[in-house]
Image (cartoon, rainbow, N blue to C red; front, top):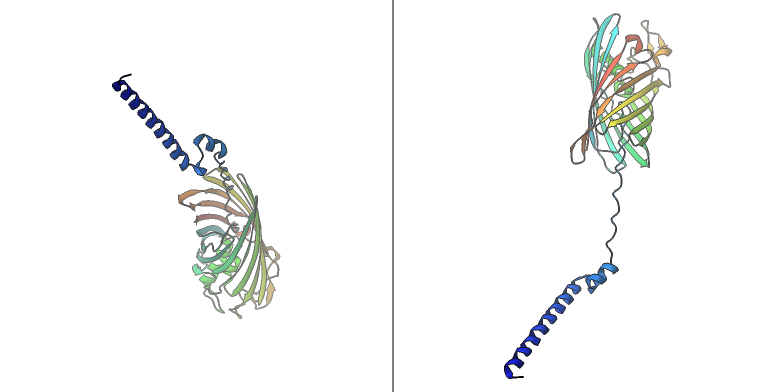
Length: 340
């Protein structure tokens, strides 16, 4: 073997050796970058990819009631107007009772609430018409949810600053308060009792599953007179006790459309009194001690921003008994809630 051939073989050995060292070094560096410094094959066996837990299913949709309380501690604003059409002695009248409510979610279970009201009454015939701001309500909602059952408690009271209070209220304002109470099916009676402070406690429970909502409600009102001690034409009682209850059934026919029906009942637990035309104290007729109404209508559900929903609805209500049926009351409610 001459010197030239020996030199070629030495160069070939050096090149092959350098290549093997380079491959081994790259493999070692790659393995060092892996968790635990394991080789790719060993890492794949020793550290399998973790399983990703499936996302929880969305909560079933809740059908918002017409005049019952929502079962939620939520941040929301709501404009709710009831338009009532009625007849008295052959003459027609109409009333618009508008309520504006706002609540704020302090915690997932607690939300304070403020509710304001305004009434415009166009009385039939020669009866005095008028308008009135009624007693505001302040209160607190506590809400819980366990599986498909939701429940809530409410406590609050009125602020007795409504128009038409005192011993000698203006006839048109006093009539507007009475008409507004009737336009709201008697369910918000404490707001229209402007001579009284009213303490309010209530409870709701609802079954919400898939597309169905079934909700029940009961509320107790304790009225204490603070104005108009001599306003006997409207009332003479130092205290009164009232109650309301109702059932709401709602069903989603589409994700953006639901239908809701409601049965509502209001009853005086004490017998209200007033002065008759001769100044004698008398009880109100038994037929006027309670009110029964039903309502039905559609509601839409639109997402208008991140976590924000607009849920407009319209319903038709009808009185089933006296005193509203005597005046052929028909009521249309236009409801515009925005939930954040």
